[in-house]
Length: 210
Image 1 (cartoon, rainbow, N blue to C red):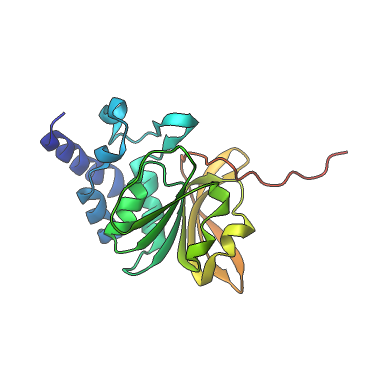
Image 2: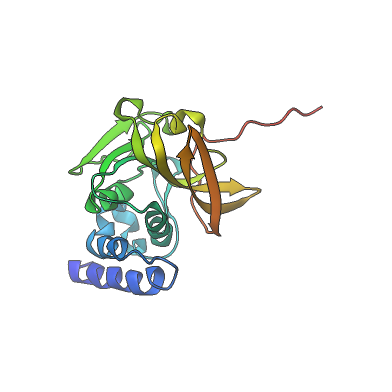
């Protein structure tokens, strides 16, 4: 597929998915219109690059649909200079967009994941739920997927009044959520139901069962 074809598909994604679905931050729209998503999709899956569906990756993981990434970015309110802790970097697409928006990105991904080499992005390999304490405190926690809960380990790596955007799995439904850290405590609000890939390692503690 030619670069011109991908460019046309990217423009169509912006018009038909982002502008019609509550992605209102013009900086986010401009970044997603510029960054070539096809560069972050496995070669055998590139025909799927701009469709509104998760894209399977190696190891049972998936890349979120473009709309999910756009909604997360829209709610994140990224400003140039933000220190961002990105959890679930996958192939690096969200990291590239955050960097395009002027953030300093620390991207956490499991061992054995796709190679990520991006200007302005520091990649940390290890368990997603461990974060990257060496770079703390962060202004924004961007969890690129759905979790059952945001662990205290990550909250402790955030600055006071830091923003958080994530997906939350609630009784089988994935919801886009946003919030802030106040006095070391994270408060999250549900913003919309949206199809989002789940991230491993974020199961909520199970209650005691007799």
